[in-house]
Image (cartoon, rainbow, N blue to C red; front, top):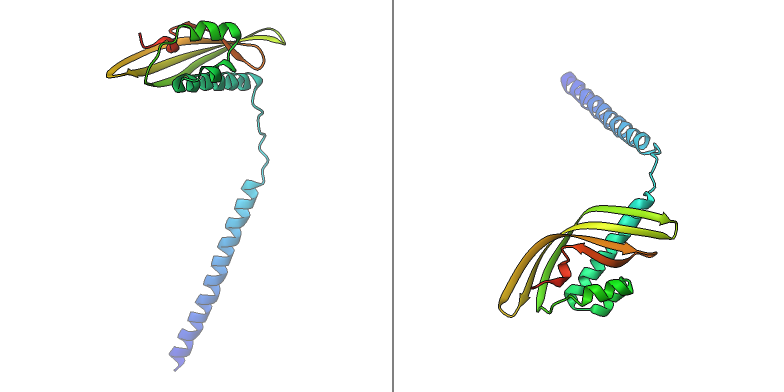
Length: 165
């Protein structure tokens, strides 16, 4: 009987302290989480050059999407008049195309606060389908954008919009 009473007391003692230990452990973990989460870290603002580069790449992607859909009017809103004429006159017809652009480098030349030129070097690969014929090409193009908001003015080197040959 005495042994049973001692065992009961040990069980009660164990349950009491195990609950206390778990509670203490949870309290320490929550406290540590709060202390680590409350530290203010300085959030760096996005540099203006990065914003300009991103907007230029977005313009180029919209032009590419318009080209793939055969929507010249959709492309026109993101091009200067000279750029639209020089790029669309060289375009060839196709049934479907796959075109992948990978931006490599963006260079921004600012001659005055309102006059800037953005040059985006893009590696591209494309496959054009017309009837049963399929042509694949790849190249490196330099897209030159001007104005605010930036609009495509010209494409130097390998123009992806003049294929298939």
